[in-house]
Image 1 (cartoon, rainbow, N blue to C red):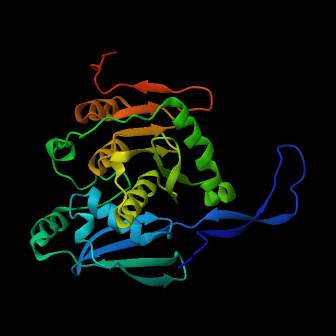
Image 2: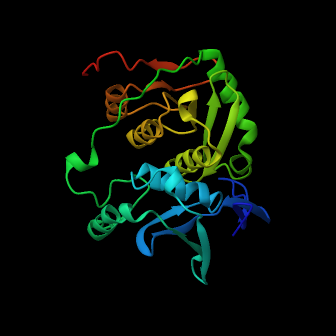
Length: 273
């Protein structure tokens, strides 16, 4: 496995009017296919940065509703390589026998996967199934969110090096960053974070999640299913993200910057444009 998460390519700086410069190395994030197998059944292939894959597989299975963290056995990783597309990984995990029925059925009906998590799902009702209501409200203050935004920049080693990855951080209600994961995909970064919290026995209800991305409905759903009461993103939400968040009681802090943010109270009704 590429433990660094990045690879060097050769580039030239080419200005619009000047002659091209000399070639020099430039770091880019690694992106690799991750095939997830449960009890020997091929379930999904996701494109992700091959870092913290045990966390990723755990968080992915939880987000899919296929298992609780306590039901995920040790994740066995096997590398496979190809001269054209490089290295990929097969992640094998065993779940309790009572979980196999839904897995077999969903694997049979699934026709494709993407990071959005909706390809292969049949019907609007299945795509937007009800979310569980959150048990508590966040008590984090705006000052804590600002502290978290400042602190998580230091933890984004891959992002600083490549300028091409997203980060997901879990923070205490006073703004301390307790865990952070990075990936080329924002959904993958959040799956990795949720998996890391579960494996470490950290309760997501006792803090908030910060994402270096827009607030999409998929991130809202993953945050709610993890049981976290507040999602912070640096860009704006979609209307569906707001609707889903309000239905589950999830508070949103969006367009979060050093000087201000926009708060979306889950108790306020949705206003049509």
